[in-house]
Image (cartoon, rainbow, N blue to C red):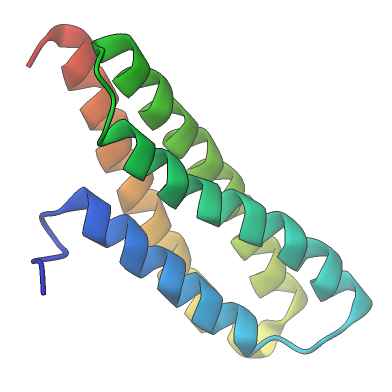
Length: 119
């Protein structure tokens, strides 16, 4: 298995899997169902755009893909926070996901910044 702490692609993939595990534990309430659709779209978009960035040919395309990863990551954090607050029994697990997601967004932000600076 690839060292996930130092490989952003694997780290994003593992984050998505952890979000899916979290989702599977949520009660099937109307509110949760509405939020889940949004979270699934945003978190899977992170992974899809990360993979797309890995195959781009230009710096501009690479930056565009990772900018989308960052945007979708921030959106995912919003939905996870909302689900955690609406489901107090899973709040601790939501907080762990929020910490990991925030770290990923920070790493992606650094990747974008360093790419723009030519590093």
